[in-house]
Amino acid sequence: MNIEIAARQLEALGNETRLGIYRTLVRAGTGGLTVGQVQEHVGLAASTLSHHMKRLVDQGLVRQDRSGTTLICHAEYPAMSALIGYLTDECCADQDCIDDARTEEAEAGAPIG
Amino acid sequence: MNIEIAARQLEALGNETRLGIYRTLVRAGTGGLTVGQVQEHVGLAASTLSHHMKRLVDQGLVRQDRSGTTLICHAEYPAMSALIGYLTDECCADQDCIDDARTEEAEAGAPIG
DNA sequence: AAGATATTTCCATGAACATCGAAATAGCAG
DNA sequence: CTGCTATTTCGATGTTCATGGAAATATCTT
Image 1: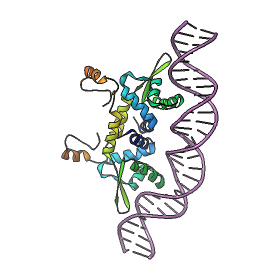
Image 2 (image 1 turned 180 degrees about the vertical axis):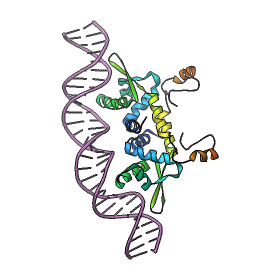
Image 3 (image 1 turned 90 degrees about the vertical axis):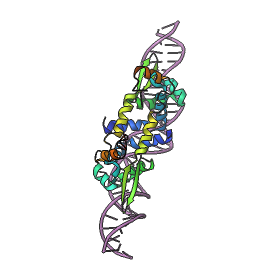
Image 4 (image 1 turned 120 degrees about the vertical axis):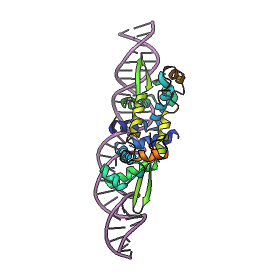
């Protein structure tokens, strides 16, 4: 993970329409949904949905498996975990707040993470 | 937390320049940094930095405390935690994957979270 | 090959964004 | 009040984005 990838993934999620699509897939779980099923959930023109879905796929947040003429879309959980890790790691790296945190609340650790 | 706030926060972080600013503040820890110190780290025109910092503040990701003529900026850790929570909750809500996960790896639980 | 369905690509349009210099504001020091 | 420093607002410019209709592509079925 690096800042360029992280920024692009966050940008992909940082649009209400795409975030809705993504969360629909997260809720769907490992079984995934077809593009058409996602369209029923979010109610967009097919071309608009395709455009947004492509952004999510390009950034590695969604995987598509073809099954005949239909494409089954899945949230890529490892990508999400890596992104979250990137946001929270190096917390307080330029400060010795880990010791501070230990002193105050041993369980919680640093402010994030 | 709702999808509108989450999308706006993700959009705020979904720009390489702003993500760099934010991570600088996360690394700085609870002590924070002045706008000028952040500028030294990221090397932007003051007006550009101000523009981006405002976005982060407006979305609740950064807090500014005034100290005389200088503004001290802090990463808002609770906002980050809430955002991450929003991304991962409801994982598999439309599927009974929790049972699947229990069967396979009791510790890990659902794919995310 | 022909027909049917699922999905994507192309195209155009209006809106929002990123950048920076110049000017303006906020607050302290004297 | 004057000068000084830190930061923001304004204005302008080029870039990217979101949207959906129309046309194209992909795959299966017969």
